[in-house]
Image 1 (cartoon, helix red, strand yellow):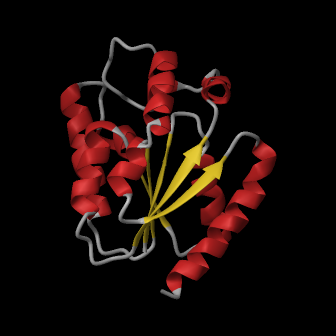
Image 2 (image 1 turned 120 degrees about the horizontal axis):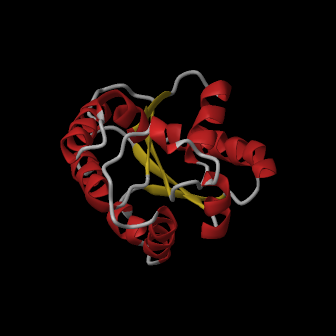
Length: 176
């Protein structure tokens, strides 16, 4: 089973994935940011190399993958194309969070640890743009053939309930 964990920057995707990994050791985390750390250098060439390795790992036959990225843009399209005809069960968890909360969460983030090519768009503008794209249901339009699991992640106290709900859904999906 592959579960795409998609959402805005600062929505809590990484935190949720890390909590799932502590609860259920079957999962392997495949995170675009880890591939950016390993292969990226702040250039477009480095970004494309990181994306290539990320997509190669997603393509592996590991049956328990949490695949973490925003799910929008070029990478989202490539991910969809790669998984569209996958014989493996692919589900989608969309982590929803108010953009103001996302902005608060990233204030103290050390961006030097995640090499990403320089862009003209400010991070706050990116978060609002992504929020708008999520509101337009671009993820649903892309992944509508898959089981979608929407979660609201506004407050850190919700994490335990989110993980419980997720693991409960997974056990149901396993049966089918």
